[in-house]
Image (cartoon, rainbow, N blue to C red; front, side, top):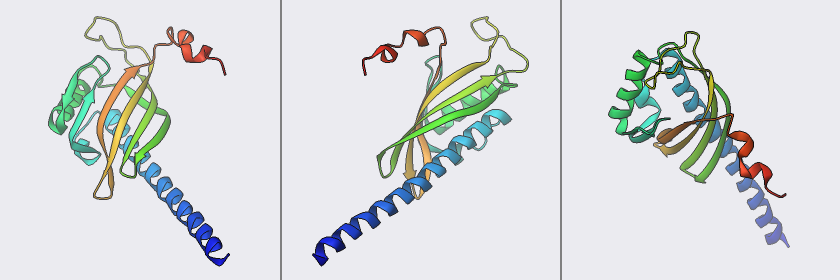
Length: 169
């Protein structure tokens, strides 16, 4: 009986420790998301290497695929010197799911606005919009770093037609 109680106590304790680690990991990932938003709002990506891996892949909202820290930092910076130079990004929500103890996926809903709309490459003026990003984080040397990301625009006109919203419960 003592062995059973000891085993149960160990399982509960290890579960609590694991939950505490996950809470710390989630906070660390959220801090990295905030660092990226800080870079966006300051239109300066000199700190890109502080929250990304060397091999980061980034797919932007129009399907450009930037490979590695150098390309992805450069491309973000170019666009922030031109069409995004006055945009503001606000985090609306973050949902984190751990794949392993050292790999996590974060889904971020964020809002982009521009006090001075600019002309986009397709000729349209920028409009306030929400985006959904899927970011892959890996823990390297005790630090969570973004290893891949993709950002899409949430199309409000398409949302009523999401089949999951009509799915039987």
